[in-house]
Image (cartoon, rainbow, N blue to C red):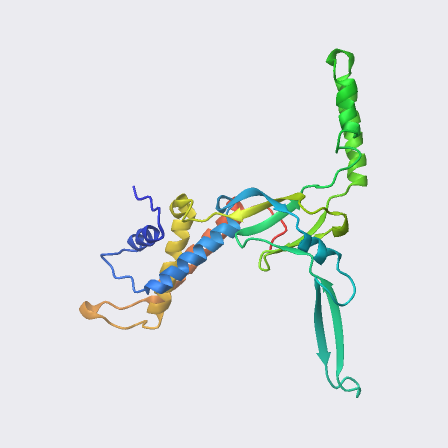
Length: 281
């Protein structure tokens, strides 16, 4: 049984599915390479097996704090965007400046979605030796026979509600096409050397995780794309009679490939796509 584990192995498999080497598949090698890249990109962004959940740690630097605490119209971290309009009601040229604090972290391009960042500041409820949580364990849980566990569970739930109100989740903004993670936090309260944990999803690299090349969807989808490219090329020669009386029917091949591609895309939306819960582009 064919189990492609390389890019070329996947290409050879798909060409055989289309009839090669018995039939000549008239698609350029560069075009096939482009179609492989399109297939892997679509697989990474739409199929739950094309990504992995990661917890990336980032160490805060002084440059991050300087950019985040910058204010005014000049200085480190301040970005100026200028808009210019001419001939507005006879007043000539009008220039408007907008100032933005570039408090973002550059994210690796293989990260395709960010869920959240974990709390990295201590609260009176859950952090430190003098927190309520620590005191509960220290003073009340030394003897389980003297404690009503239901009461303890209710107390914990109540404390978590207080913690949620007093120490809210950090607001973030992320767009996959920018590779930037914006953190709407008080940068002046952060310390150099502290770590933050980013809950995110990253795309699988097929050259590292070679089973991607053997995924059933990847093989079927790439075959449909090559077939579409082949049919599109043959459509330009539609009706041409070849040796032996064979007549090219490019549009029929092209429309069949389009139908197969659409069916696969519908299948991935219904069965394999992650729900829209990530902050992604």
